[in-house]
Length: 589
Image (cartoon, rainbow, N blue to C red; front, side, top):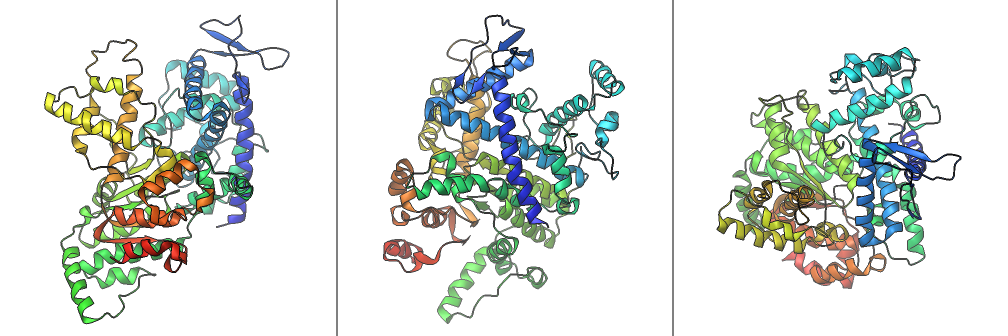
């Protein structure tokens, strides 16, 4: 793998995309100085914005709706963190969203994963300029209306291949949303406003993505996703450390750039094989499995009384079935540890007779869990896990239910969201079909969950969440009884419903116990931590407050079952510094 080429491209791509996002936002009347109102000549069908050029720019139709969504998102976030930071977040997020999608498309087209068996960004023919799908749009499984068919033919006849490419790119993203909703947004999302990519421009993102990174580096190498993510954020990381040198506290949106680091393959395998792997073979001895794990270490010889205790623990492990093993990476980054756990779980399942298809579905539905505060990292971790599933099950992404809809289980990996701003007045409309007792119980538990997830983006996985009746809460969030009537009180209830479902899923992952906790935690000294995060650490884990890695040692103890495994990369200072004495005592007892 040519990491130098990957690094150079990723750093350049972030700068390039941010510049394009700023330009596109400016065309919409949105700048770091504020949001421009449409000019007086605007109508419901067309809006004009003054950008300092000879003529104002205009947007029409669905673009007006998309801009309104973007403005709402920007203003809602501005209420919490101020307009300038909110604007910066929108630019950064929009750039990374498109970067992640293009990385995903490139990975899938080179590995010929449906629906990208025909390349969208490049051609299998060396030296050919037009991507294969642009050359033959109708060879794909994309469905086109009569109007779209005629438009495509018009573009082809007039050799307007850039227009055709952008149209196909959006259509493919919409199609991929059906099978990979964690990576690709649904049709008409506001992010479409920012997409003005070219495959012809030799200085453009598409051309360099195709030509700078060798195709062999993409072939079933899920770890390339992690390296790309780390390098993409490297400039932001340098900027953040420059602030730290000036003794400036880190704001919550910069925590990921200050703390995330891609974990090399051999370290990940060492961690996973000696936690998840050991859990299994100590209860289900299997020499063949152990021989396949390069970094597995045999248990050291112990004193007789310790051996007796270990024998009792192994009896507990022997009772565990593959589908019962719960594994979590609570600081998952781009998902490198998760995909390694996926590999080891596949070996465990197959060792007891599961087929690859059965094992893949069970791992996704029952075994793997992951959390991160960074939405960008979540997208890539989600994608990496789904691609690992596709690696073992060729039909994983194309399987459909009886009605012809995608039948693809969603992995339990999440970006941590917070409950701030969720309309609690609308909770009375939820729980249609539940008994009054069930509904009252659900409302009580939901309110408790919402309280505990306030400012969760700031705190991340260190939050402790009370155990709830999660099945009841899911049924509560599933249906509303507002009779479809729209008034001020029910306005936006669909958004509330979607957020509530997310928070319930996140709450369950934070609340439950795991047999294996494996993670590379964030490192950040106490002097760099914001006052709000510092106060929460003092409340929950005061004995580890000197550094976030120590806080996560304590948190992972809470995540794990008493006889579970915790595998972490940490600084060694906690083993001898006096400030960690109380924490050492907790670990030992």
